[in-house]
Length: 270
Length: 133
Image (tube, rainbow over all chains, first blue to last red; front, side):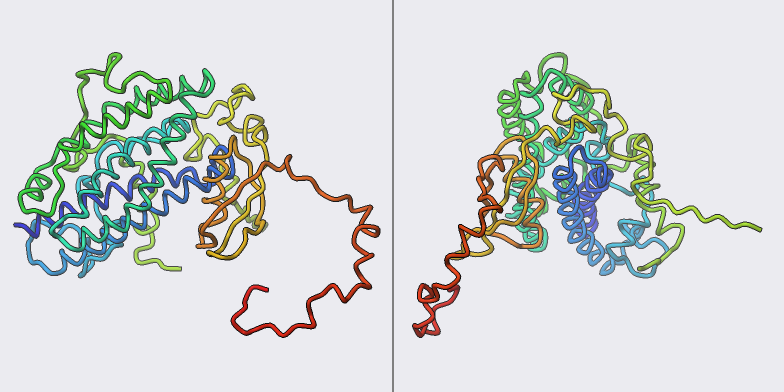
């Protein structure tokens, strides 16, 4: 039971990182300027690195158990690896939150998605360092340095766009409209998150919300944006489901691109 | 039978089909510094980047980049020039503040030093502990 929870929880953390990395990597070669193309791709690589550590750990857990309920990660292979977990699962088996799978849109939308998520991930990893699970704690500690930079980089861009020209301000407001409904899920725990908190190795995400919102509003104030949760956004219906495998229609397209090569040429290497 | 091979590179994919930029407005005004094309980094000033590779060594010029201000220049430099552990400290300076000597005056500026070997400290024995000299 606890093994299932640990597996699902680890996979959820890994999927969050991988899907945002995949989205960001779509900018590679298409960034607004060369330097920012490199910056967003760097962030992508950081996130892929985090997801690798987590997938390796999840594969270890799955290979050490006989539980049938989490057998999906092995795919058709005999042993689960980081690759079978990333490339051979189906839509419903991915546990990332909906925010990270949202399309890139324009630069403002990509920035705001990164800002919302990095700020959340920063608080999450900070607390995960105290996890009773030594591996998760170690991964969190190592990743936190990267995430600290992601927060700094994306915060500055939010300020730059919001406090920039009329055009950039409008684009950031449009991005806020598009993304706000996906932020609630970050702080709405799934069953395995609740069990993980009870077991001592998970983080209570609902407790992160107040601090997250306060930090968002601080940056928004500098960016001359109104508070995030007002202006038609208070009490708005928050989309959920991603953590349980119920994704938005965007998700199939991501998997198609992500998995195409492994599906077409199983086990291909170069 | 004629066989034609067409080779496509990543950059050949039209922007509209590419991932990142499908909604970018190409006709946006040049004052919008985050768009593409004319409104790209071309209107951002050029910065020279200096990296210190480890403590105790001086900063060395490594290249240049575009950025809107000093803070962005440092972050861009971090992402462009220190990805492979090249540095522990970054300096940036706007390129327009760098003044250079005139190459045409090289003869009068540098050649007079050629025949003054006594200015070189080559007549001393350096202790082995002294590095970076």
